[in-house]
Length: 473
Image 1 (cartoon, rainbow, N blue to C red):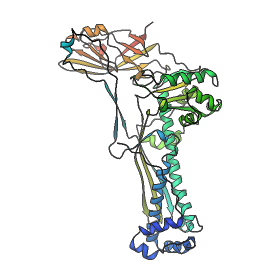
Image 2: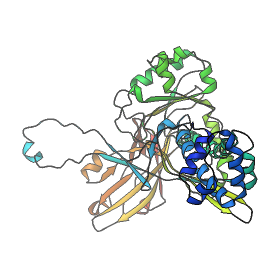
Image 3: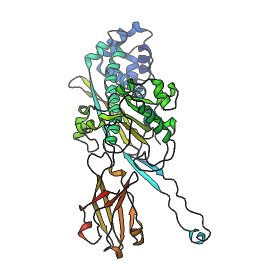
Image 4: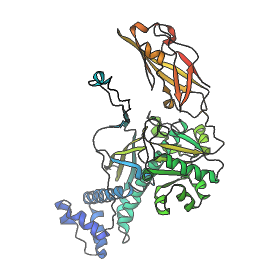
């Protein structure tokens, strides 16, 4: 199970810190370095440490490790979106998220009871896997001369370490903020979010759309999540990410009222974002070059974000975990300096089973595509059946994701014993290999019909072949 790291604050004085280090140090350190009773003892302690490299190394490592631990526990929650992190995973690399769809109803029938008594009804269980996809390291170097300078003022010791630690953790915090932003941008531009128009920026239409959508998320629906499962998002779990400039056009009370919340509660649910149309790609250049799990946020994607004013989501939509947070060091004697490394591993993903909605201006085209291009990506033949796997792509520019396509089991195919799985698999029994199969699909209730048929024993079903599905009137 993931665990949350509690927030702590480092409030000890220089004297306290130095004495704690001495208390836990080696016998040689205790014999050579005097205990500090007040800040007046600082020069004496500093002269001993600076004159003995071995003791200086022990002191510096203990000091940095001690403060680094406190700083890490404190700063892990400084990212404004860190409340959505699910905790610290100490073992394993993969997280399986399981969702059980609600059971289907059937009519009660005494006549059919005997045949149903021992009939198996499998639960509709869906799963999504989230893996470690962020492994970075932040290096920093401390030179021997810094130790001497650290004792030149009363707060020198703390100032030295805070400069070092803060430079590392500020970078880590900023990168974590970017990763949350990355998830939102990628999910929207890949069509993973339901889009709702709010009219022109700054109009009352937006407040009406906010209130209506917030109300609807409290009822079971398949419309607002990528997987199309029946789920709800209670108002207490609803968070809205809002463009900072767009937010400035609204009175806080107006927005709070739109979400049926008091001002204090709403402010806790409001997540401001600097801009949906900017992203610091330079931060991740080196990491992207050596990883296949992190993509560049393209100019085309940022252009698509220009009409997004707010995103309302379930707090469970973010699936972000810490897997490793470790501070280590290496002494470089040839150069009389120490290299320190903060290593951070994270699982950065989102849940396809949680609700998320993007509010867009009228300029955004949210119409369903006129056609779908379906490619046969797999064909497996056995003695009993042939299995075809499909991958559908809506017309370019529609903003609809492939995952929004649900393939339909028609009565004709059922009578032939041919099974269609809604996410794109067709099971064809051996005695039906010559049957012409007409593919149907739906997107948000809109039906699409194939312009041509395929058969299991013909070239029409070979891997790489495509079929166009057109919108039915």
